[in-house]
Length: 281
Image (cartoon, rainbow, N blue to C red; front, side, top):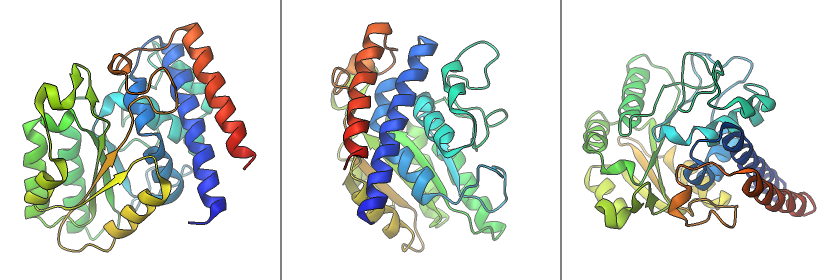
C-alpha cells in the first residue's frame, strides 16, 4: 500500500464516521458505537477489497458482503453512499418513515446490500450459503461477512463456522469486530467469547488477529485470505467502540443511542478537525 493510497483510505474512513454521526443524529436513533469501530473495515472493503460496481450493483460476479451485525447499518450506509451507490444526502433520512434506509439493511430496497440482516447470528449463515452457491455455480466471487463480538455468543454462529469448514468454503472471509462491548456491558462479563481466535481455529478456520483501525494490517489480512485454499478464513479485529469521537470511545452507553444536537456538533467538530489534518498530510 502506497502512502497516497493509505491517506485516501484514512480520509474516507473519517468521512464514513461523519456519515454515521449525521445519520444517527437525523434519525434520533441508531447504533453509532459499533458502526464507528468498524469504519476502517467498511472503508477498506468498499474502496480497496471488494469487486463491486455502483453502476451495476447486481452484477453476477460481484463480491458479496453480509453485515451480520445488521444494527451497524449506519456505517455500511455511509460507505455505500461515499462509494456512489446512492446519494450522500439520503443518509439523513435514516429510519425515517418512507425512507429506503431502514434501521437494518434491506436487500430489496438499498443498492449494494446483498442480504437483509438484523437478527444476530443469521447473517453469517446466509454468507455461508452464498459462498457454497458460488462454488457450485462456478462463480468466482468472494463472500465477506462482519460480526460483532457480542453476536458470536449466538449458537447459530458456530453452526455456521462448522458448515463453512465442512464445505471447504475458501471463498468466505469472516470478520469479527472485537470492540469488547455489547448493549449490556463488556462482552467478557455478559458471556465471554474468549479466546476468540483459538475457538475459530478449533472450528477449522484459518485465523489472524489484527488492529482493526490499521489499514496496512487490514491489507495484509485480506491478501492472506485470498491465498488460503480448502478452508474459510477469519479476521479478528481488535477495535475501539465509538472510535473517532472522544466522548463515545469505550463507552457502552453509545451502543444504541443517537447524539443530540450538542453532541452531534462536538462529534462533527472533532471529525472535521481530523479530516483537515489528514488532508494536509
